[in-house]
Length: 289
Image 1 (spheres, rainbow, N blue to C red):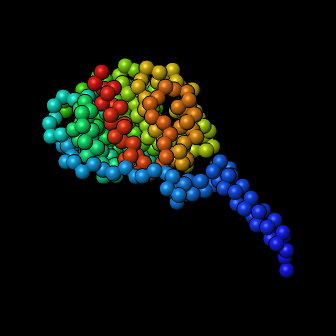
Image 2 (image 1 turned 30 degrees about the vertical axis):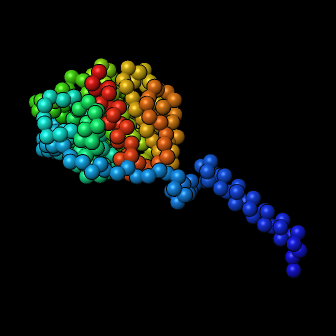
């Protein structure tokens, strides 16, 4: 039979091991921090779609020469009026399409609520960029970025929206795409860019399969080191602290001047809905200047 002293030593050792393991999880040395934080309620509440009447939504399709396919689109207005408004392009995440802004994130309700609360009015315009193209030209010839500039913006202009200066907002894959578009087009045409949980990597070997055509494609379209291309554009970059892209997002934020920051959250629609009111207020301010 073990002595009391031996029992206490063993118990202390076990407690120390648990504490040590917990410290390694918290530091990210071993996996499990995001799940642990979720169980403990440390990842924040999911955003809730406002219970207000949605503004008008117009939708359609067009044959895209740049994307070599027919794409769908939607324009979300803050109310039933379709007066001339500035516009923010909305770039969806991986595996999504132009309907996701409404069906998954409720942007039609969020925009109506923001403008009703005093945010200067603007429209949101979302379009199919391909499920995993990462919003840049691919070896297949599919070029969603060219589609945005040469096809979608002219379509929006014909519908009466102001497109000489515009904003761009995206989440996950689309968050990366929004910042890439801003860096490529530059100011003064791009007034503001917003990214929620942008899909960012430092090295090609770490990327999600299919996100780039190879290391050369990755290097050609990386965002790190391009602060000069973004310095005259208003930026808001948000990411959940337990998001797999949090580290790279924090590194990019260290290179550029941006509103937003890292908050409690995961890589989920609930987090993106929580951040939408702040993002929409940001665009309302910047587009009204």
